[in-house]
Image (cartoon, rainbow, N blue to C red; front, side, top):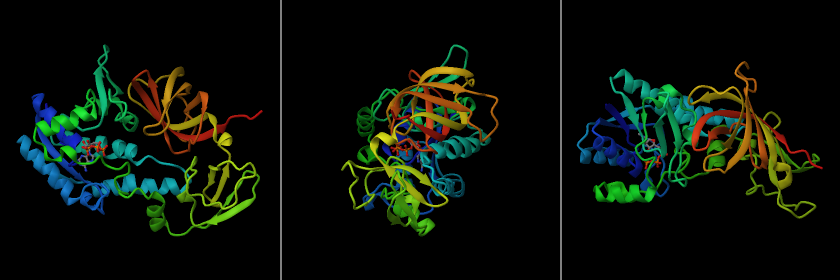
Length: 368
Ligand SMILES: Nc1ncnc2c1ncn2[C@@H]1O[C@H](COP(=O)(O)OP(=O)(O)OP(=O)(O)O)[C@@H](O)[C@H]1O
């Protein structure tokens, strides 16, 4: 097959490209220039797409003896990932930009360009496994290294996209990948892993959003509406957040308080007890299925954030719902905490990804 290897300049994608070459594919390396404000990883925090990253990717491609190009996808990334991230926070929701990047950039814009240029597939260093099912469809499964498993952020991929994807690292642990990179003489063998949000290299999401959006004053209130303090922007808060609330006055019961709700229009952030955070029912919109869409009810597990726990659940799918309405309802068998609208609910049957949907509403566990 003619394969585009998406090479970030990191160790995973270098080894993934090497394995694609070993498997006998005709491989071309491509580094994506995504961020408009690239930051050198030598400055400490590892961001994305700096000149050094592109140079590391090029060197790895040279070592493998494969052609190498840089594709500028900065505009697509800004429009589909960065702007969406800002819009979602503005609306009081909690987006996952990696998932969005996979959906709109790596397995959409990049794959489309690859196919248009006559390539058959895109290989990445994501940790997930692909298997052919007896009916000829491609199934995506969790990676064997559960510490690195990235099937959650790939849960948005459709059958068509999976049919043109290769994940050469899914059956390997990160330790083995680093050892293999060292054995192959790949220079980036010890390069640190990237931060979750590549365009916010120092991890200060609130500071970054504050710069983009400016002050949007509002109040923090407790569950009975008492104002506890003012704040400069509700976008600095996420449901389930405990740290950095700077409430000053302790709760009546002396226990920690958590963000329970964010009202985007008034900017009111409600805080309360850990118990009040628990939810056991979710409504989700915009489902994307890896294979044939399920209908009716499904006993399964769901994952509600990257690297989050698996929760046993019964999922009800209504294929007839119009866009914007809850197409997927999820009953969690045990309550979960810190679940925010905007997050993806990825549905698993064992290790197999069934699909994903975006959480639009959560319902609190009835107390007493
Ligand atoms: N700027 C980029 N250019 C090309 N491919 C990229 C880029 N960023 C990410 N990728 C692809 O997406 C995969 C997953 O990206 P992620 O940000 O999770 O990196 P990672 O797990 O740290 O991998 P790596 O060690 O290769 O950077 C990478 O392995 C690579 O194939």
